[in-house]
Image (tube, rainbow, N blue to C red; front, side, top):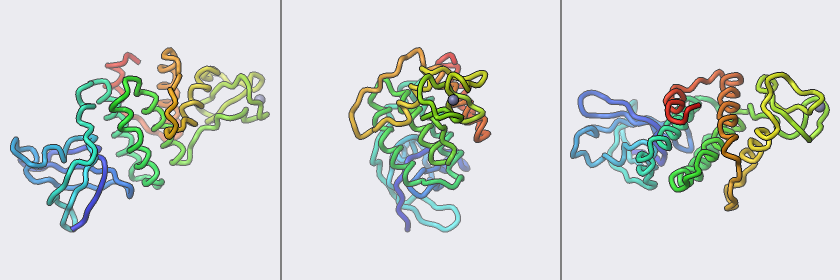
Amino acid sequence: MNEYQGIILKKISYKESSEIIYLYTDQGLISVLVHGSRKMKSPFLNLTKILNQVKLIVSGKNLQTLRDGEVIGNYSSIHESLEKYTYCLFLSEMLYYFSTHEHDHEKLYNFLLKILPLIKEESNYIPYINMFELKLLYLLGVNPNLNSCIVCEEKDELTFSIKDGGVFCKTHQKENSYNNQTVQAIRKLYYHDLNKTKEIDIDLSLYKDIRNLIDEYYEYHLNYFSKTRKMLKGLIGY
Ligand SMILES: [Zn+2]
């Protein structure tokens, strides 16, 4: 028998009434077979709900099978808001995709445990999604340079170039850069300290540019294209 704690990222149907769930833990991704979980009367219904934090007792060698478990963090209320839930699916897809990359899973998992309750409770939750994406860039070793011009180290009036992965001053500015307001917002998100209960003050008008910048960055530097992104676009309009 083994015991795991983690967040359920996704699940797939298996045979007639069973499922395989994918759990993100502090050691990375683990898959577990849950017998009969698609039956109405399954005692495991909440243990297979996406985003829930669960503790599972499993056995078996190749495909580990669920024996028992409990929900530690219930995030099923996120499912009630279609937009919030889609953002979380977007995040789960990303976590799942990069779970096979070498990085510090313990750090990322603990970060996830910090932001999920905030996403669940806050109506202004999108900045937390962005923080997570920026944190992952850092852990993957491709974090953007946000502090000073790549050429001359000037710190004012910076604009962001996706290709160069960093900021430039007015003199060395590149074409098709993101403006200084967006750079400042990204910096706020990147350096935000979750342990201090500080309001995140980011202008709503910048959300679209922040979204686009992070998307482009993931595409260009990690060749990552999200499938859920289209669904999200249908909901938020960009
Ligand atoms: Zn410069």
